[in-house]
Image (cartoon, rainbow, N blue to C red; front, side):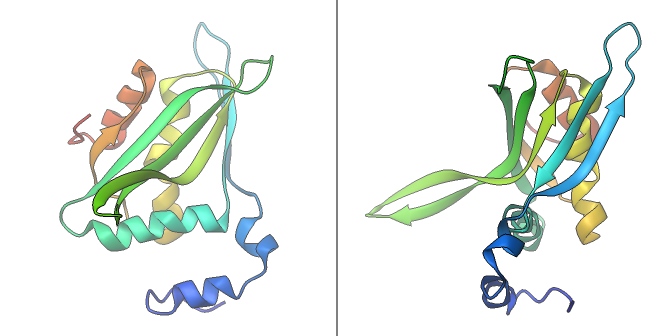
Length: 160
């Protein structure tokens, strides 16, 4: 496979099959023993279509950094597992006004909420696949204190 080229990426990516672009990719599966508590286990998943949003963030971050967003409030089934989204927002102009929308990068499916579980998608996944660190300057998150702590562990300078 050829290396990434920002000038030709969109056209080259669109030539790939839907299965290639949208197929599930397990970026990381984890089991974290937690003292005096149930272990935390889960998986970080994405697709090529979604995960390339991380590369677009890297290309656009320059010296200003990026804003990342996450929310871990969605319980998907009676087992109580949580789906945590991780992404950014983009601003765009439409009909004489600006708007914004969430741009997903990856999802973590986690059994029990813990700092260690939320730190996983925030820390090294992007670096592992692209060789560049996201320079996160701003974060938007839900009410979970473990998510805020994970943000601050991964990016000490982040403004929440």
